[in-house]
Each structure stands twice: as structure tokens, then as C-alpha cells.
Image 1 (cartoon, rainbow, N blue to C red):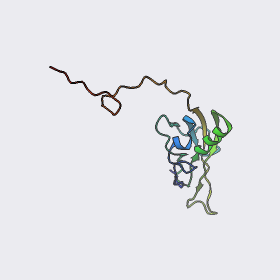
Image 2: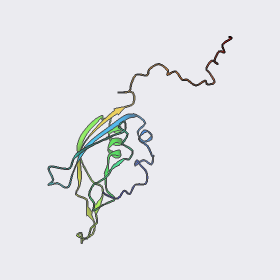
Image 3: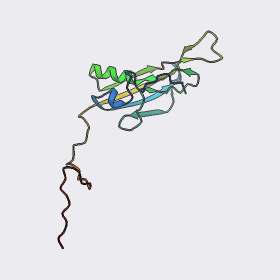
Image 4: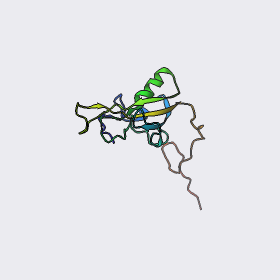
Length: 152
């Protein structure tokens, strides 16, 4: 797996999806990684999303063991989609890293790994559950009536 080089979870310097994309309720990313241009079969398909609870980083890691500072910058893709008003996009994304191995004599070369992706964004206010009536709490708070003592 590639070495991560970004110190913040998302490219714009924030640490959470909600802070990075306040106008989104969810972002679902499905992808299949390929080892290079001639790899037609690819590795297993994977899926991540904010509502699924596993979209905590803006970069999907590259699985190339020789890759350094690599990964797929889906946070930048999502930011571009939000700017352009898109809710769905498919395409190919190249790994942002470089290979540094003993077999590379001329210096580091670009990592050949890439992903085929499908991204679906859900803007805030869509696909959110309808608010149910206010949930009754068992705790007495500042604005709750005090218990009545029985006069027995």
C-alpha cells in the first residue's frame, strides 16, 4: 500500500467530511483498481461513503506496494462536482504517486495504477429521513415539569 503524504484528512485543510462538504448529505464512491493500462480485469470492486461510515479520508489509498505518496484524490473530484453542480459522475482517475523501487534506475516514475470510479452525491435536504416528533426523554431538564409526588 502506498505511503500517505497528506497531513489533513481532506485537501482543503479540514478533518471531516461534514466540514469539507457542508452542502452534502452523502457521497458514495464505487471503484475498481487496475494495475495499469493493460490490466482489463482489475482488482475487486470496492465502495465507500460518508453515510456508510467509512469515508473518513479524502484520498483512497493505492494498493501498489512500490508506490510512494500515492492514492486517488476523490475529495478534489467531489469538490469539483459540487462546484459544477453535478450529482453523478463516472470516469478514470490516475494514482497521484510515483514508484520508487530498486528496478527503477532512472529515478521515480509515475505509478501506473488507476481506478474506474462512479461517484454519486446527495445534496443536503435530499434522502434525509423525515423528522419524527420530538423524542421524549426520561431525564428531567430545565424546561420539563417536575414529577408530581403522590399524596398518599
